[in-house]
Length: 336
Image 1 (cartoon, rainbow, N blue to C red):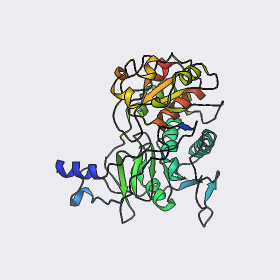
Image 2: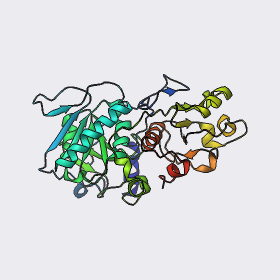
Image 3: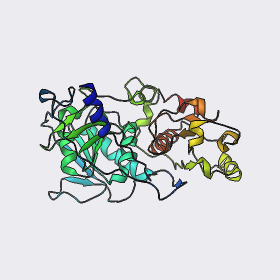
Image 4: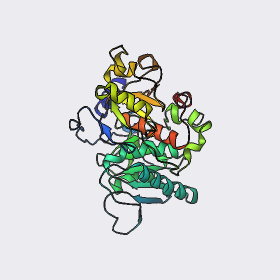
């Protein structure tokens, strides 16, 4: 059974490189080479008849859900609240607009939330809401209102953090690597099936984490200031650019993406010889690469991004800056 479990998990393992950048545009090494894997569908059988031995089937809830629209068509019955309608990635102002509306609804309603969004915003919106929302209620991001509602209405979706599910019907968690490890799937019988019996929140988002205990103000759903956090590739950082970036008052923070940083920091590495910036810097792996980046392989002034993608690191840094947390040590403490 363990071999079957492993094989099916591998088949469901998705990895994606994304162009999303809600805080600041990318300075990219290859702007047009991003590829997205083909969507697939899966319908594992429940534990009583084989397949995943720890898969739990849907247990529908009678609670209603509230629907917010940020992209796509309004439901024919007009049941959704339209915040805006965009086909691109949500920017920082729009992300905070969503969080304010959702937070208000969570305070006044006993049901869950469904957010209709463009797929390009799944990664940024789900990770952002994973930070600013601290709730046990179901919050589901989707580009298919029927599929999203099925997940949100399922009683087993509560306590799992922010989820997102597309037309492929594969359910992902917002606090994990984007489109990386699925946590469930909607079957062809329109019921949700979960690969874990209980919620599997990552260390950064656990109830006793630094994020939830020391920096509870991160749940503030209001944008307090202008936030500029560029994502740059190390190969594109020249000595003149690094000098300008290091002293720029217009930049709130920076995310550096580099294969060199991941493998080794040498004297030839631009970031290793770059002067310590006046703002916090997070180093991360390239998009689509799921591994853990430790501080052993980054410049001393930088913060190791762990498993975070460039967009996730950008969002974490942006939320921290928005709440006046800019010390590298303070941001470093957010990582388990």
